[in-house]
Length: 275
Image (cartoon, rainbow, N blue to C red; front, top):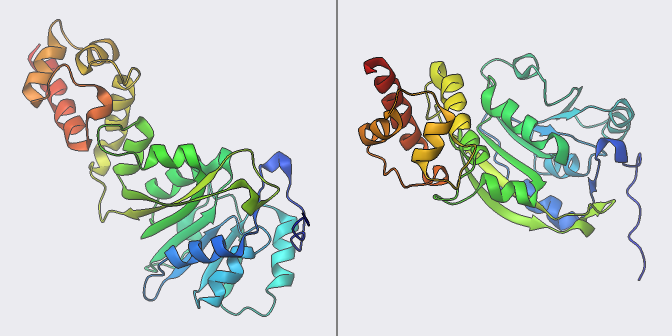
């Protein structure tokens, strides 16, 4: 078998977890899932050697490409020196001040082949930050993608952390041979459409996640036991709070949705106040 031709440009760096996407069909499928808002732009996270950047530009999208590595910034500048619809920014997507690079009032969508080790911090940064994208199409490790897009009744803390801000769905899987070099695992492309407003009020988000994380330490145990062990309540308070919230004490934390968690949080506060 003839090995695939090497991608042009700098080589991937193992220390940075770089796997450059080389499959042209996958690149086209990712770009097809991206919707650029009218009058807006597409923010590409981790432009790398510019394989996806080129496909996005071919579709006529205004692209703001983020890249953390100076050597890749130089390569992108040379490769797209005549691209009038592209702006390249050297930045870490985990800490980017989005308001500093997105013009005020400009809607945007996000796309990227995210490094496995940085995928969760990047997703969380853009879900929680301001301004937020209209949608996010990202490629991540398949197991993480399945957790984010898990069906009701099988949620994890990660599922909840995304669902508060967005509706997520899986689009397709990508095999290791689509990359240079091939990773040891499969990847998946998912799409997250952000809600106009989070399902939890901004002022309560920190409290909400603190409460859920405390109770979610044993997701397969009955919610009564998880609540009693994870959260301080007066004697008998766990059962009283569950009754107030209308939640069966034998359910498991992984079966609760956002509305259930909010009712339970309110009920716990009431039980503490009355106890």
